[in-house]
Length: 404
Image 1: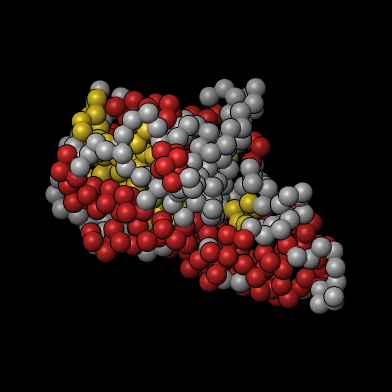
Image 2: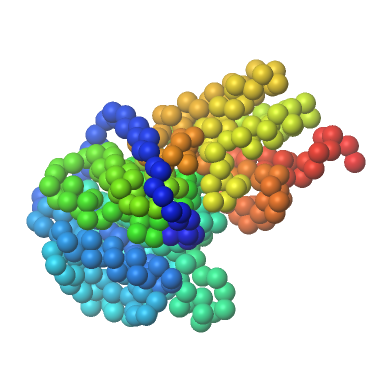
């Protein structure tokens, strides 16, 4: 699993697929390839075998005159290399950039360089970036074990570093990526999507953990090479559908999600969550028990403090114990924003109450009640009222608001 193993015996999964019609993406580009797909494959850890598997899947199809598959792959047993994926094999193409060498995949400058060089060396009408490794939601992504062993510290890309890499690459190339995919656990959160704003048109990610095998790259590669003129929206939909089919048919995996988000709705989600946080703080004295109940009854994920955002808002809106029109209006605003942005999703049976975006809410579960101090560093939390709400709910402890 991309971070956490959660495999059980019998398969009992049903796909709950929602693909809505949205306008096709129009990307500027010159003649030649239609798509360049860049995969930042950080297998410098215990996911190495799955990195090898995913590369083999890509090689079963390979690039052609219309689609470039470019992979920066680092493994725990070897060093990093920049690979152009052909049918049946991959070609090392990074000599002018110093590859192969032991790259630190947790260094945002390595990610930035990969994007810039991919766009420069393999120009196309459309660009997709897939980030591959362990993921921890807003807590970070792309852990590099070799570097961690050298430094004695946990080395990964933080939310701030992710945005820095994407913004710097955009500045150098002038390109807004059509699709950014997170083949990583637990990344479908506004705290994560907020870091990709202005750098990508569409985002694909999972509220739940991602099985070790990750995206079904053979099926995805077959789809895009068969129809290289597909839009960014159509590529997102294909990835979501292929993912659902693969894990429905793969025995044992019963706990997964995947959703695609239109970044045009990021501002709407930002404003809606900000308004909801303000109203929740103002309502705590009167409705704390109801709010906690509505949090607890919403869909949760591997981290129990990752709560489905729309599901929580739906609980607030339907809660007869809450008689506050401002809070109800704020919850409705969140529902509308999430529904606007999430245009494709697939869920296993265990996640049937998922709607495409989770958010951080410290819960009353043992060990999860107090706010994680590092959340203070998350730009989405800083720029909205949500950090203040998280602090307020985590410090409640059943006391009356405002009393010593």
